[in-house]
Image (cartoon, rainbow, N blue to C red; front, side, top):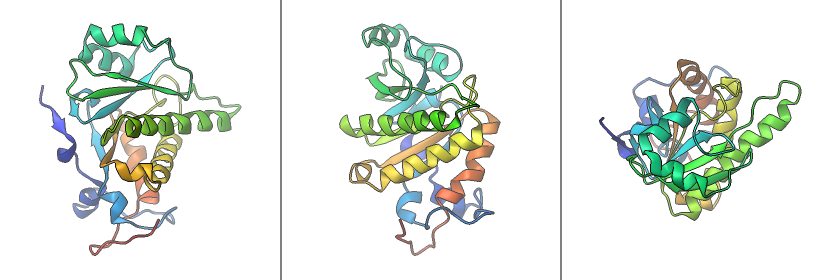
Length: 220
């Protein structure tokens, strides 16, 4: 199976240049900045094919594999990933843990446990999902990883609405990239597999990362 490197994943700047992303229909939530758009990527396909420094697995609390992207990552990595995960003692919702990647083309796997969407307490679900993204980014920096690719956490059987999840992903990543630690990352990639998640990101990304001028802007 062909592998895709971080440099081969189109940045938001490239998406705008090629008219694959449009300016937002609603007022943007942030100012335009090529400094962000050059370092954010969007990939529609199989996260297990990416040869980035780290991929983020939407894991369950056992960390021992499951359905969807979690199962796909474990199958592609081989049994040694499950063996290492057995030593970690599980993981709580909103938290993340890191392992080697074994037979995957990436260097590391960051396992994060997203929330099962709570329709009666969506604020609790939002806080947990934000924590998934933030703790994963923290782990990447702590381990001196420069490129990280996120699966669409909790949007599968956990039932998180795709639009809301994309908003949280974009907002949390943008705020992190504006921090000192965020400057240490070369590229953050949003990975979608389901069409509903791709549609959500195509709609939500321009509000958080609007198109910048060719000369570059530096709004934060």
